[in-house]
Each structure stands twice: as C-alpha cells, then as structure tokens.
Amino acid sequence: MSYAFEAEGLVKRFGTTTALAGIDLAARRGTVLGVLGPNGAGKTTAVRILATLLRPDSGRATVGGHDVVRDAGQVRRLIGLTGQYASVDEDLTGTQNLVLIGRLLDLSRRDARARAAELLAWFDLTDAAGRPAKTYSGGMRRRLDLAASLVGRPDVIYLDEPTTGLDPAKREEMWGVVRSLVDDGSTVLLTTQYLDEADALADEISVIDHGRVIAHGTPGELKRIAGSQTIVVRPTEPERIGEVADILRAGTGAEPELPRPGLLTVPVENDATFTAVVRRLDEAGIGVVELALRLPSLDEVFFTLTGHGAEEPTEVAA
Amino acid sequence: MTTTIRAAATPPRTGAPRAGSRPFGLARHSLSLAGRSLIKTLRTPEQLLDVTLQPIIFVVIFVYLLGGAISGSQHAYLEFLLPAIMVQTVLFASIATGVSLNTDVEKGVFDRFRSLPIARSAPLVGSVVGDLVRFVVCIAVLFAFGYAIGFRIGTDPLSTLAACLLTIAFAFAVSWIGVLLGVLMRSPGAVQGTAFLLLFPLTFGTNMMVPTDTLPGWLQWWVGVNPVADVMEAARGLIIGGPVAGPVTRSLLWTVAIIAVFAPLAVRAYRRRA
Image 1 (tube, rainbow over the protein chains, first blue to last red):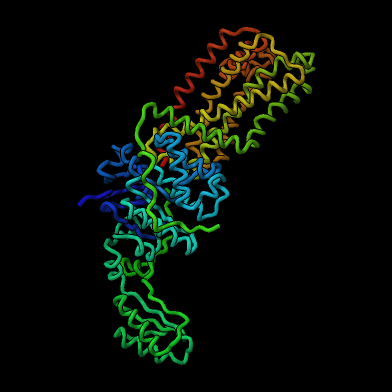
Image 2 (cartoon, each protein chain N blue to C red):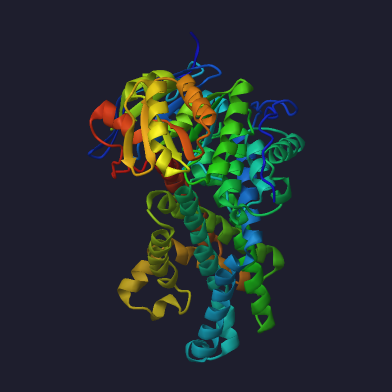
C-alpha cells in the first residue's frame, strides 16, 4: 500500500506540556485522512510537524517517502498548508499574494500571474483580486488561504480546521472544494472538531485526544463504535405523537424516547431504516416540523471512547 | 456578490509548469520578498511619516533652540548637526524591519513562507533589503529640508553620496539586530520598545549634538567606543569636510562585524522559533 504521508510515534513537548504523546498517522494516496479531536488534542502540532514547521522530539514522519526533518526541502515541494497558522499577507491584494508565492516556487513572472488568475477564478475571487486581503470577508479569506496553498500544485494538502468559524453554507462550499481536490488526485489531511465534517469528507478518521490516537477507522466503523445514529421527529400536530411512536417502534424495533414534549428520538442501526420511517409517516399523513437523522456528536464519540467529554480548555498554542 | 465555487469542476492543475528549482534561489526569493515589503510600504505611506517627520522636528528643535548657544550661529550648527541626524534617522528607521517581521511571525505569514521550498533565510533577507527603500526616503527628505533652511554640503556630491551609502550600509547591519529581536520577542510593541532603548544611548551618546571634548570623561570614553559615533564622524567628514579615513574604516569594520554576528544569530533564532 502506498502512503502519501506517514507518521510514527510522534512526540512533541512544549515545556512541561506534552502536545503529542506518540501518535501514528497515515493516509493512502488520493484519500482524505480526517484527524478529529477537541481543541488542544494536538491536531495542529501534528500538522506543523508534517509541514516541516516543527521538529518532533521523537518519532519520525515522511511525506512522499521524504523525511520531514532530514529532507525538509523535498517535503516542502510536495505540500500545501492551510490553517490558522499559515496565513496570507493582509496588506497585499489577492493577486499579489498568489503571484508572490508563485515566484517563490520558481514560476516565471508570466506563469505566476497565470496561475494566480486561474486560482482566483476557481475560488470566485476574481472580482476581489485587486483588493487588499484585509478587506475580504471571513469566507473569502479562507478561500484565498486555500488558493495560496494550491499555487504549487501540491500532492499533499494539509487543511487545519478549514471550516471553523464559517457559516453552514460556507462550510458546504469548502467541503465541495476538498472533494474536488481529492478527485483530482491530491491527498488531504483534514483536521476538524466536527464529526459530521470528518464523516462527510474523510476516507479514514483518526480520533485524537491528549496527543494520542484513541481510535482509527472508516467513518462507518467509528460511528459503530460511538453508538448508533438517532432519528429525531417532531410532528406538526402534537396529539398524533402516539401514532409517530408506533411507527418508530415498528420501523426500528427500539423503544422511542420523549426527551421533550412533542419530540421523539429513537436510535437506528442504518440509513435504510430512516427512509422506511419517512415513508410510513408520509403514508399515515403525519406532517412534521422536524425530522432528522442525527449522527452522534463529537462529544458522544468522545464519551464512548474515553469516558470524558470533548471540551478540554487547554489549547496548546504551537 | 455570489460566492458559489464551481465545486463540480476539478481545480486547475494544467497550464503553468510545476514548481522547479532554478539557480540563485536565495537571491531571487529574497528579492521577491523584498518586493513584498516595498508594496507594503507604498500601500501605507503613513508608516513613513514618523521616520521622515521626526528628523525634521529634531533639526528644528536642536538648530533653533540650541544652535546659537552651542555653535554661536544657527547656520554653523546646522552644518555640524545634519550629517549626524541623518545617521540617527536611518538607524531609527531600521527598527521597523524587526517590528514588521515580528508582526509577520505573529500573524502566521511566515509559517506560509516556511512551508515553501525556499531558503530559511530568504524571508529575513527580503525584509531587510526591502527596508533599504525606507532609508533612502528618509535621507532624501532630510536633505531636502536641510537645503530649504540653508544647509549646504562642504565637500562634493560624490563624497556626500559615499556618506549616504555608508550610513545605509551601517543601518542595514543594525537592522539585523532588529530582526533578531523581531524573531525572539513576543509582540511588535516589545520589539519597538527594546530597540529604542538600545538606540537611544547609541545615537545620543555621541558627538551628534556637541563636540566630544565638552563631555565628561566617562561619556568621552563611551563616545570613543560607540560605533554610531564613528559613523557620524565619517558622515560629517564626507559631507562637510574633516577627517575621513579613520572613521570610515572603523565604520566599515563595525558594519561587517555586526552583520557577521547578528545575521547568523537571527537566522538561527528564526529556524528554532516554533
């Protein structure tokens, strides 16, 4: 099996804080590895080591077969980095930012301009190309950051929490971008705090906590570990809640719960059950104001895996 | 504006060739990054205000307030003062390099550069070289103002040019100290404060305002070992006339020594900064 990047036993300490306590990460070529964890779990530290910005205290990592410490120069030719810590210059325009990076990647002036125009068009930033980046909205900034990391056509792209702080529509948009990068053959390392994001994008997910990988698998496998999904139904007419409960019981074989008046939840094993329930509600002519198949939250996954919640206030700034 | 990305399309990968390696990387990359500093300076010219207005204010205060008392004539004092003020101004301007560098590190712009296949020192060299333009602007403004109030060079244009170049070279060396501070310190404000604290005794502890022989003994000793005093002496000699060979030689030696010590230190600190 050919890995685009591979990390083994990475350890990193900052003073007395252990950011990484020996983690392994790897992604096959052309896939997305989701690194899921709360703030301070060590996600950014791991990305920074794989991006040659930090040296591990022990352990080793390779990108495209090149060691990130000994062969850092080679690694830098293969990677693109987008994240909280790799930023564009706010005083420069969109075009100037991308042309500068093109020039630093040894493109000719003409090629650098062409590449900048191409990327700005692709990220729908052509209208803003001549404005300083400090005038951009949050979503535009993210897109320019991402464009900047793509100038050199990297094989491996690190996206460190690319959607944190974006509204839902902008998140969906960013997901579309990630998917097309992978369709195009790139390998992506995506860190996120959101299970639904990892579920939507990643081929495999490593869940990390306190600098350790506490679970690894496909999204499906992880969801099975974390417990089932939940159907949530709120009928338009509260008096028909008994009928809804009957349909849910029949469809899932489990006993629905009533966490709040007028709202029913029931665990389900697979998506097909949900479709069946939706059909039966429709056949019975029951209108709904809320009907959803909910994934377990990151909190629930963490609770299952570690016995504690996901909120850990100690962010390791690195 | 609409912000729908054509997500169905694949990102553009064809077209320009893949990044390759060409010779003279450090020089080319540093120049590209110097261009960036220049764009930033031109975009916010108000950043130049302090370093251009401050020497004018100093000249006005010193010449008209103290000139009569110190030299007997304001005009004679202007001749004496202006070359030294030039050195001080350009040194103050060199602080900005460290400050803007610290801002880049804080904001993550340098992490982007560090993830690119360029020499680690290129962003530092680029900042320092890009700021040479600030020095030229400072000198031009100061000379224009000096001429307006009656300053005239006492030697020839070539010697004056040599004085300017010597000053710029020395400030270039000193800006590496600023770079070191910029990489080591935690905030742009701290860099600025520390740099001024260092530059005050170096620039005022000289014969800039009064001849050395009027100073108390301990201060005369300090002026004797202070490299800035050598540069001021050299600039004065080259612009209005006086001993040149000794101070110029000492200035050049200091310039080389400061670069030789602080440039590697700055690059090393930058490599280590996580």
